[in-house]
Image (cartoon, rainbow over all chains, first blue to last red):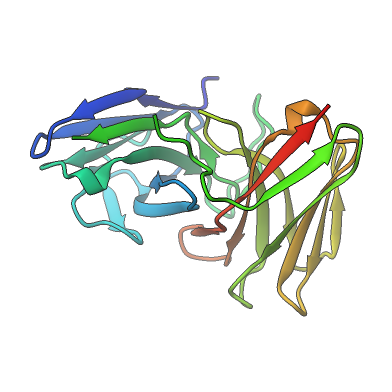
Length: 123
Length: 113
């Protein structure tokens, strides 16, 4: 199992350009999340999804949009990139609290599993 | 490129010593806590978790202690190894809803030979 994967790994944008970050998970998790991580700070939640076709705002949603058309994928879009969006972006997924399954990974019902991150620079 | 972890508090230990990383959490209603390890250039990786009905939980070389009275969490790493060098984050969660985690800012652990 690949777990949580993210593409691309790196990207450089000019101010005003748009792009989409893709997150995919093969653990059949209902919940998916997008975070950003800035130097000296913890992870801040941008948007999240509790199931296919649903999305909701997190702590820092401005300037981002998301879509969850398929259960395994969660897309993060920047319509008009700004230098303030220079950051490392992480996707995560988790199972609902009452969902128990055991597969190749050592699951915890509440734990979020993270992808490797996308390093985005906006010039 | 950017370096996640700039300006973080740093704990420096000698290889073989025990490490203790502390975390103060904010929400007295939080009932589930997780420690994550993040190596340079990688995503956070689950280490150990603990529920609020417990005071202590042990894993392989790691122990998490929870003091709900003062809202304090600690991660103890026994016989610290160079591979333990990373940034460590605590996260708190309130059961119910969508499993929202609130992350601390992190502590950098530097292990010296």
